[in-house]
Length: 629
Ligand code: ATP
Image 1 (cartoon, rainbow, N blue to C red):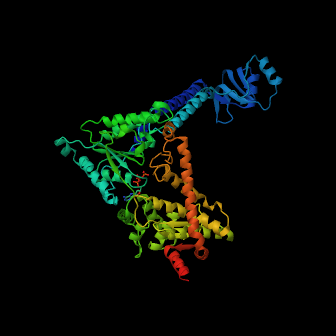
Image 2: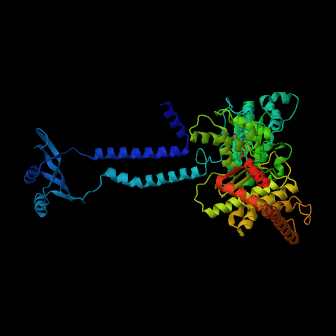
Image 3: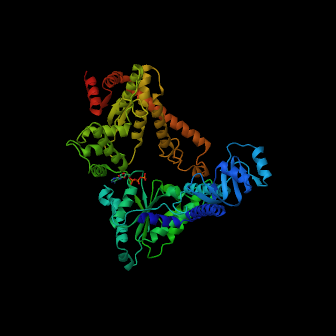
């Protein structure tokens, strides 16, 4: 009941609800007024029988009648005692009502006229005064009601949480102040980043300590790292460690359809956080609003830029007592507006890279904490088999393995489940498909080509698995996994990579004297790698050691369009030649390796056709056996 009262009183604060209640009250008032009016108008009227009516007529005691269809309402000339059909005993009747058996037209009218009765005729089914009032106001009620609904709908589209004009209020989420759940214990690895952030936590916990010595703590921390590496998790953990409120928003949520909404959301969120110090504001994907100004299509005053300007002015506008730390995350620091990064704004940069071997194991440990594992699960081996993955990928791996174990009705998750989950993540989901024998053979030789060249070339990543089971978009996969985390890629390594990529197509050519569309992805991968080698990494002697940014991903079309090309047409032509040459050379090299080893190629392909999946050890065994013959 209290809840009801509360919700009604809250609703009444809203102007829309006030209007709605006013309309409802008016309708109710008109209804009651209509009914009262009706009652007042009504005189005491009795229903008499048709014979009694004729009797009174004959006696000349009828003063006037109103005829509507077969209904007659009338007034007697003088009050008379009449025996009423429905009631006991006689009643004094002045006004009456009766019904004609059928309309005798002229007969009854002649009789009435002869007696000098005042005759009134009404059109059939005339509305009562009450209904006339209702029908009069109903269209207005409908129009106002529809307008009310449209306004509410429009407001919802604007995403505003409250009243009609409150769409500027932020969608900031306030996390539990008393019980921050995530702490640094939930963030595996990232020791360096944690260390850098300790000072921030200390400041949030004990701002006085810093003030006493007149030290200023950086108010803006920028977390930089690839997707899924734990930036959001780390920001939450800071709030958890310091036990302060955590206001978070994704920068893309600032931007709405209306210009000015983003800016007002920024203002609103900072206002809320400042009112509740010490606190943390977390802005995810800051590049959505923070990219360099003047890069958009909409001129210098588009919605994004207004939002960014507001953000900049809020970052400057902290009073000494406002202990608010603003943490932002991005994976594109290169596109951020320099004004955001200057001292006093986001000047503390914490880089969060993909986890190394030790961290991957630690992350896996965090995510298997509440899972039931079999004895042989080797997290070390799993960590070794997942180079280049992010924390989010590893969380997904642990979860997929659990789901696979559940699907198989197991009590515990074993190593097989983890390996199946890893294959699914690395190579895609198995696709049930009927494949012709010829297609299977083509796939087997294609994958054997990749595998054999990878095995023969020194310095390539070792083979993890070769499979001709269709997965994801591919008909077959050859998975190579580096043994350790790489930070540099030497030219020789990349040339080998190109060669391995083209080896599938070369094997098809050698065996079937034809090529197929199966190599599309290999060619795409090889071309993109060769383009980067030539235009970004200075690996072509003819083009020279220059970075021309040709193969850069297009982060934002606006910026790319605004940039002039940094190379001449001649150089562009030369780059094309060099890219092509790298690929053609790689193909020739793969051919050189595979052609003399046709028997090895046949052996691996045969095994693949039989087993469908071969591991690194299988390939090594097949090659060793074939060589010893
Ligand atoms: P994005 O850039 O896409 O927003 P992000 O870097 O913010 O990604 P998070 O959302 O923090 O990534 O991480 C995704 C998930 O990955 C987390 O929920 C967490 O479970 C897991 N994760 C990532 N890094 C770690 C880590 N170091 N320790 C434990 N779990 C991690």
